[in-house]
Amino acid sequence: MPLRRWSLRLQPLVLVALLSLVPLGLVACAADQKPLALGCASSPSPCLSGSAVVSLDTSKGQVLLTLDGAAAPLTAGNFVDLVKRGTYNGTAFHRVVREPVPFVVQGGDPKSADAKVPVSEYGTGDFIDPATGEARQIPLELKLNKEPQPRYGQPLSSAVLNRELVLSHQRGAVAMARSNDPNSASAQFYVALEALPELDGRYAVFGRVTKGMDVIDRIQQGDRIVKASVIEGGTLVKGQP
Image 1 (spheres, helix red, strand yellow):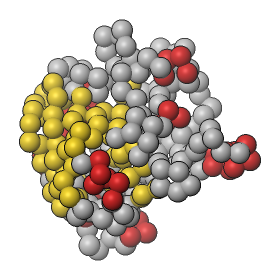
Image 2 (cartoon, one colour):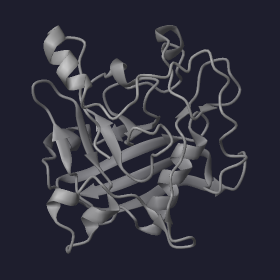
Image 3 (cartoon, one colour):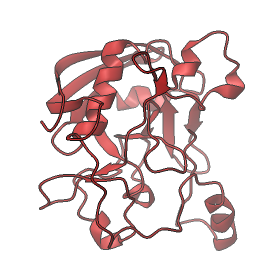
């Protein structure tokens, strides 16, 4: 599920070319539409109650992630569940973009932990739930200030609403990668290498790097997560926390 880069600082022709590569449909403007009835109450996936601290022991050192179950209960809960299952152990950081400007470090594809899978297929995998034999996918989850619950299923097209997001793409933000479908996030995630406001309202941020951003800055494509573990919090619940 590759995440593509665009920047408002680029020249118009370059911007148009890059936008054609972004796996996000810009046709639907959902800001004024009623949010879909998706979320913890109707999802078979667990949700995070409270917060969690996750340790990523990588080939370049340790990274600590603090996940926000209040603002992103379903997205953070999905991530914690996959950590507890060992899904991320041995997976590769298959996409690292630092040029022409810092963008993201992306990883978490379960396929990349399988030595039989060619590198060319990294970034195409989902988590396959052993209980169903099917790919687990979760809806886009966006929490706005002054709204009691997150919105689900539809990107925001309004800059005004984007400024109200509880979790935004600041440097060190941890968010879910996905395909064109806003409800196709599964296991792959990325860390923002700088503030990326152009991604706000389009991709779900669910936490941030609280220790080891220097490690993230050293990660190269092909480096791996040796082990991921929950070291604090991480209470998972079915239904609304």
